[in-house]
Structures are given as C-alpha cells and as structure tokens.
Length: 57
Image 1: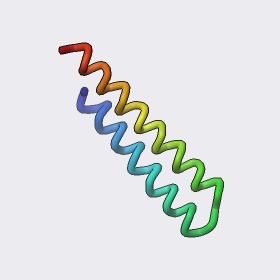
Image 2: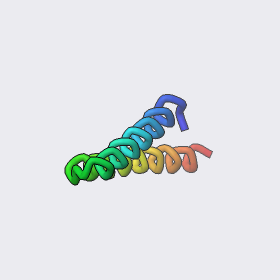
Image 3: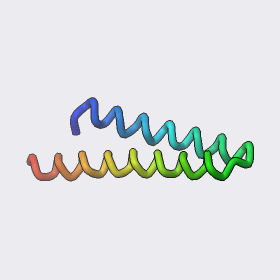
Image 4: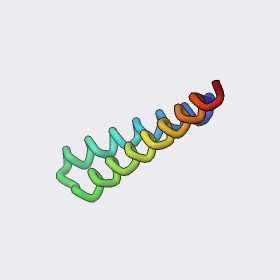
C-alpha cells in the first residue's frame, strides 16, 4: 500500500470516528451519520489499496 494512500485512509477513519463520537455525545444524528460515512470511506480506501497490493505480488 502506498504511504500517502495508507495515511489518507487512516486519517479518514480517525476523523470519522471522532465526528461520530462527537455527534453521539451532543445528540446530533446528522453529525453521527457523517462520521459513519467518513469511516466507511476510509475503510473502502484501505480495502482498495490492500487489493492492489495483492495483485502486485
């Protein structure tokens, strides 16, 4: 996995996790949903990079 893509995936996951937790804490469903979406986007990016690595070998 390339370093920049790996970092980007981890950053999206972390940002989504924080946003989701903050949304829950303040009772904001919209923010919670946004956080879940960002986490999912980061997970998808990470999965894509892992698949690319498998086919490189």
